[in-house]
Image (cartoon, rainbow, N blue to C red; front, side, top):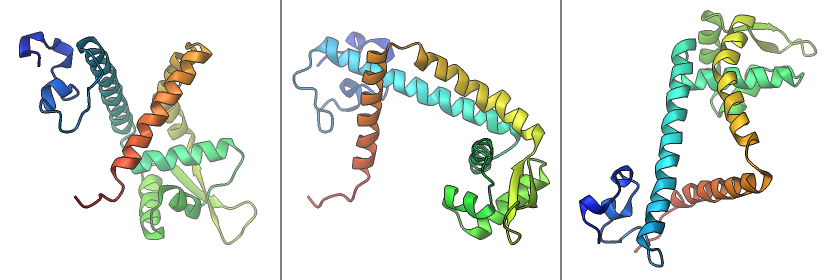
Length: 188
């Protein structure tokens, strides 16, 4: 086992099994030499930095627009569906967010009061109300979330096709580990 001084500075965090799992109870490193473990830790550190940057950008966007996370998800949904030529109703939003109709009503009241949406008559169902994002909110969303997405798209577009496949495969397998970890635990 390397000493503290032998562990690279970037790896002295919670992603390095040499630091957080010295006994090897959780992380299997058999078959990996020190250089390979260090490389894996660099990948984990890069993922942590990405996640931190994503959280900062999301929080900055919410602060700028003075909205909560669910509010932002609702607005993004309405913008995308509207751009697809679809009319969005409160029911659509509730289903998308997985929230009750009462919670959706409160959310829409809050967004309407803040000048982010308007409720208008549905174009083809006189019993329904359509939800429309205001032009000011659309511009604000494009300047924050939209610009961030555009920068990320350019980074992904700069990869060669084979590199994209490696990244996609890695992220898909990484996502699957989270789904597996929250399955019902088995009894010892």
